[in-house]
Length: 361
Image (cartoon, rainbow, N blue to C red; front, side, top):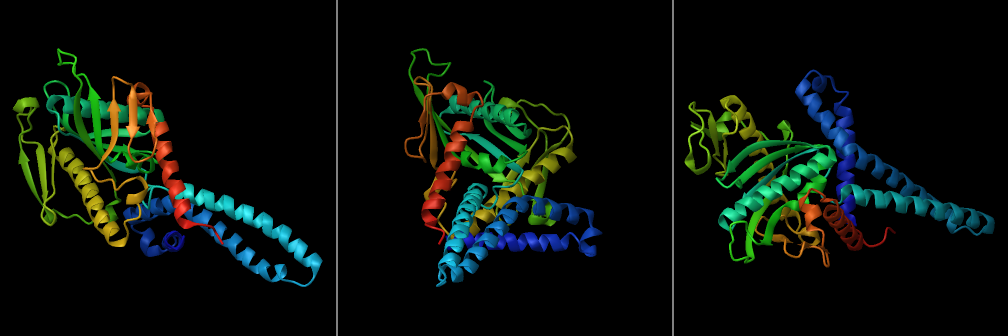
């Protein structure tokens, strides 16, 4: 529990620091800085206020300890009744904190990037990548999230070699982060004449989209190449050079965007994608330095880790991170009803957090 308390102490301290900044004239004269501070303040507010209440109740319980040890029977009885109520309140607040913190420090972010790439399996893998895109798109519609295609490499059969999405809305990263990893599909492809079941795969990466002030990225940090966009199979689709390729010097990361006819729009999208990948990259390095704890909960988010199997002949979906998490409603889930899986993953992480922390006293 100590590491959890340390993290919560840091969040509360940061929240109070941001409150001070929102009254600082030097911050208020800079509209972009004010907006970024206000967004971070709003993101931290639920957990910071809940933790402040928890600390207050905890302090009240400590103050009662002297009365509980009193030689006066009436005083002890009164203190025991009050302590019982406070312990119940503290338990409720702690449960609320577990709900708010399950999912890690980026859980409260309202914007994220979601990238889907076809893996082994050729055309069938690309079609599966398209099915995953459609699944997330429908789920976003159910949740009233805004979803935007930032870049895509379609195939001639209607699949995707890869597709990058921007998703915005309440709890987007908290819920979608569990989708990071390898997704395996078992089904009879439309092109299969003998009815044989094929296995193919796709990988999904979900990354929080950072605020501008969190990742410094200037023109001197990357190389920008401009080229002509092309369609499936190399088909030429754009007579003007509007496609953008960005290569980050320090990490070697490459982002290519060609969806828009405008070079400026492609550049803006490319920078958003690159910033998210860089934030994800540096966060992973930092997390590896700090702790391996979350790997034991719902997986590391490693894209090479197989997290889920979709078996169409049996209408079965299995998430390999949670013991016994197999549902025979694949048709509903691939149709956009991801809620049962996501809630099971959130509960699993929450329960593991509680078990790892022990009691409150």
